[in-house]
Amino acid sequence: MSEEKREAYEEEIDLYELLLKLKRRWKIIFGTVFVFLVIASLYVLIMRPVYKSSFTVKVPKFFTPAETVRYINYIQKLLKEKRFEDVMQILNLSEEEVKNIYKISSRELRGAKQTVEVSIEVYEPKLISKLANSILDYLNRNEYILERINIKKQEIEDKVK
Image 1: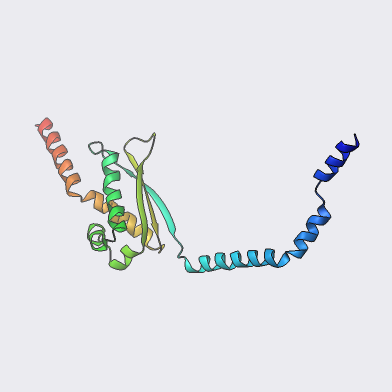
Image 2: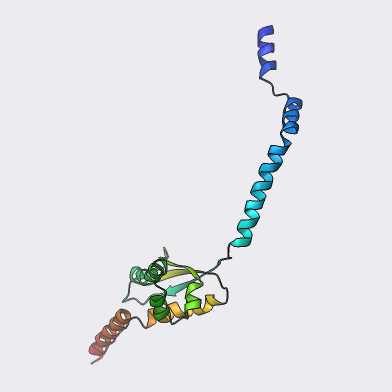
């Protein structure tokens, strides 16, 4: 029985000993906390803030949401490849505005037919509404989409006649 008590006593944690160890190593603890605090502060000061917004696009029935997602993700691909002139031409934006775009992404919304969610992330908050309108204009004046609209109009006119 005495052996069990001794083993239980040896397995106990002595809080006073722990406090003494912490007291002896306070410089290491304080130094580590200080270094990470400096690193975090530098990170916050150096990194540019990113502003995020999203909007939904109702896709016409003769056009699939997957096609719309593909067109919008093409813009992100151009941004990743640093083909800013192509993005400037597609979205009718200045070079400075294009360089302030962090990310453009899109996805089909589940449960909502013919709907696509577009997310934009920019460094300049004033650019959000202009970029959203530019993306919508790009979708509305896309040659392939316009061709599909004209085909659909022709089909409707033929049915009416």
